[in-house]
Length: 255
Image (cartoon, rainbow, N blue to C red; front, top):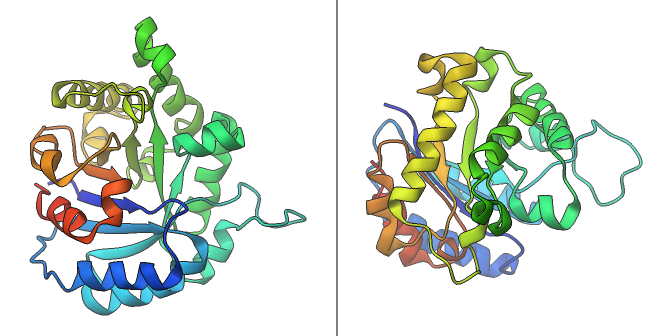
């Protein structure tokens, strides 16, 4: 079975002490995770070592710390940036790449994200590659072409053996903070389409290895229904990951 993953994205939230407390509350809940089930914690850079230490102590094979971003260059005069090589030196094995907020606020293009993916893979870091369409694209009915271009321009330079190690996260940007909602059927429809795009390029066998997470306001109340969809392999969770009871139930909702 494909990996099933609950990935927390804390974004720019919580003090160090609040982060420690949240992790403690989640880990104390106790889990009996199956071989294919995983939980990731994408935390702010200053909290990475604390998070890695906390989760590895309890669930070394199933829980891991993840970075929320990395720079696309190996090193240089980029004040305030963090390289994939630095993350690797800290034994951080996952990194979110191309989150919709990074694309919008930091001008990250598909070509830059291709470099970030390369930087991660060169440093033995698994990218959690984000894709998704804004409201204007959804309303124009061109969402499939839009997300396909994101995959093609950022990922399709990779050989099959490398792309098969990635995690993809689909974010329906149009349904986040807009008052509109995406149904479970819409989530499954897009996930199925993304897998078909991967299959057209790399074959069904490779496409079926790649977990595709849903990043559209996953909560404890809707996680089980969403994750039951055949092509939804977990979630990239924002606000609900900041509430211990919520994220615990999301982890438990994995297939």
